[in-house]
Length: 470
Ligand code: GLY
Ligand code: MN
Ligand code: MN
Image (cartoon, rainbow, N blue to C red; front, side):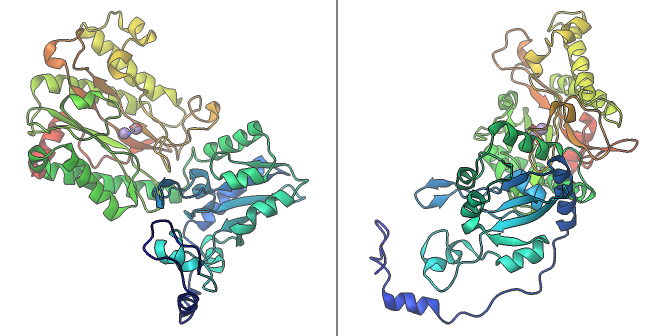
């Protein structure tokens, strides 16, 4: 008898059961698989990474399942750099770039192969294939990824034995692989930085995925408008569930926790409890994005009058945010600095708050001192892609200090948030939060707003809601 699980209802596995389980299975190996559409793009990305680190071994793990409790695990999310360099989403994998003497690299991929049916492993543990679903065989992975694949169960020993080549690994992703190599943390951080740098400009395939993410997101927002009366009878949770259904139907999931913020919750930048009431007469700030099956995410915000019509005060705040976004949009074009759209939006908001007498002028002084931040707090946008805050580890000169180039995808998301207890603003403004967030790709001659399928101006929002409101 094999060892039983504590508090399990079976006391063990008999020899007879074990033998029974091992036999009678068809050969399900797939020989019809082809390289994924993404494979040639991933090869180009690896070539770009290779050029940065001649003579060095690079290890980019995908990560492992994380335990939630006992034998329950969180949904697996592969490390972003691994996805980008492989086009793969498998757990327990790693891309290795092995240096050649000519300065280039040979790439291969470690993968967790299928469980052998010659032992109980394929059915008796909670991470076994019969419990969690079929994996690919190594040969299948080679076909799909267009890369030589090796068994990850020998990876730590292989890497530990392969001394004499300077090695870098992305830290914090796979503890066992990290323990197997001797590397320098600072040089490892440069690898992570390079992986972020290389995502700043999206390739043609990635731009197609971003379009899918945004298009699904547009449908998810329209779903929410159609469900608003049910949300009024229920809570913000109804809105979260409505958007989530679209995300799961058309994509992998949501790309980040949806912010479904009605009434004064709209002033909480990262409101995710989503458990409050949805009241006619108040605003709903919905910040949500569908993540594609390939893990690219949209990040869109609309602020909607729950009963379909803005009050004069709501409209006044909304129009200011809209104009701030227009000012930001005008600065998104090749050759502009990355910071320009942020500065244009913030300058507009600072001037508006001075005009309203909420902060002290003159406007340029208020802007220089960033006094508007009391009411707008965050930066006006960020890079977007596989991560919602994509390229976060990129070198500053490749990101915030960069000049915009075609293929960059970023959000422009100004907002104004008047806290419910802010005594410096008129009482009727308190508890109003407005953000408008769109996803833009820089083109050869300006930008394209990928999320233009959703209305932005107050009039267009009202007309759209009148058409779709349920
Ligand atoms: N949803 C997070 C953000 O807008 O950055
Ligand atoms: Mn957002
Ligand atoms: Mn955003």
